[in-house]
Length: 239
Image (cartoon, rainbow, N blue to C red; front, side, top):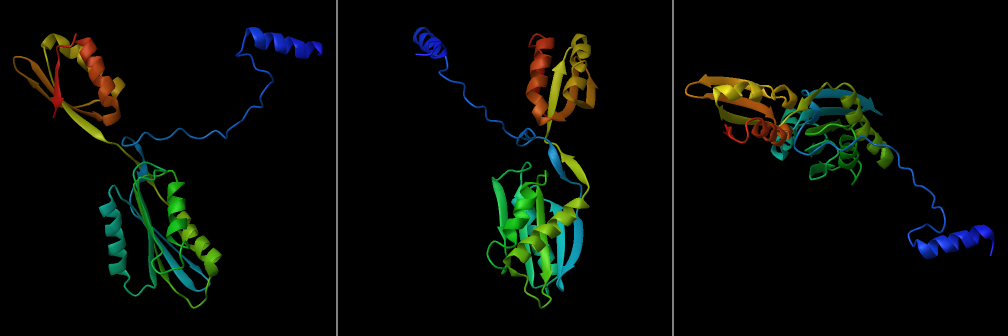
């Protein structure tokens, strides 16, 4: 047995966890951290509409923020009513944080299976936005595009609309009522900025009451901080 082989055998005998041979490392492509569900994430700032013509067919993409499935479905109905003469109203929506799959939907609306709704949804799931609905309205121009051409047309028109889109940020808010003594006010207010707390109202009587608003994701840490600052004597309830 070679000297290096003997050394590995002896180490394995006295330390079973010692590796017999170096294992190759696996390197993953770095990705953005996932967005926490139900808190803050990018959304559309408003409606977006973009149109393009491909081989004499007209494709019109309409994108809208949609915080619920009902809002997404209302967009589809609105486009059907606005353009009743159109050949197709294909659609897709994603309700929830960017990339989520819990509440999604799509429809080819008469186009060959998988050529419209699926590529549209794929674009939405990789665009970095949440709560978004898209409808691509098509007026057929007489030239068949083939399955590959339809996939590129529907997905590409949604991409064009996203390129022109302005974004905002969705925030789930909590509102709380706080009751404290006068001596505790300074210590409690000192924690506001660190937890993004906005003071909505302040009432002075035998004690002091604050009506505040803060992001839902900050609530637990804020409540722990003010309990610690007041030795657990502050009163807190939903308000």
